Image 1 (cartoon, rainbow, N blue to C red):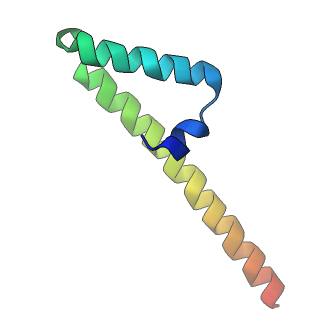
Image 2 (cartoon, helix red, strand yellow):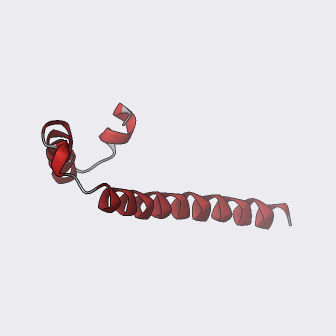
Length: 67
């Protein structure tokens, strides 16, 4: 993750990110990659939805100001 992305994450989630990273780095044999894959898809889906919503709102605002 970029420093910019991490800076946007609340402190509690940073602890969880660090913990997840430590588990993935040191106990990777116990990871369930199917679960990681599903969670990653959910997170990506939420972020893409937010981005699309923001773009749609910007488009609607610019369209309304043109009229």
